[in-house]
Image 1 (tube, rainbow, N blue to C red):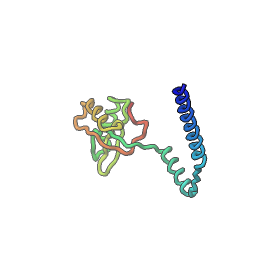
Image 2: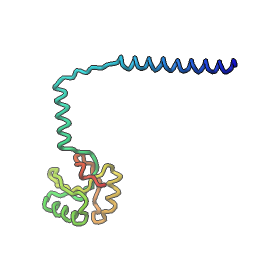
Image 3: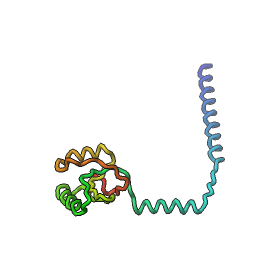
Image 4: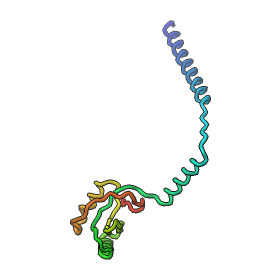
Length: 141
């Protein structure tokens, strides 16, 4: 009987310690209160930033540059040819004076861009170009 009573006593001490620890944790958890006083100008600045990013979301990624020329009509014709071959892929030109550049696709990584570029046998001079102004709808799934 001595062994059983010792086991029961150990078990009761264990339960008691758990109860005390739980109670102490509750007291500490309820005793902590944080009050944040933020300048209204900071709140407004954050709200403006969130609204601006919602209205014009942009993501950094990669595109494939197919051509560059000082002749805009040549680049637009190239875009139209590309759209006939790949109607599901985003294609548009940008202007970086003095050049107009035809860039296609939207990829999250350079590796994805290189994978797609390997299918573009009609454009041997194509290369991946980093772009920080990609709309989320342009990304290929």
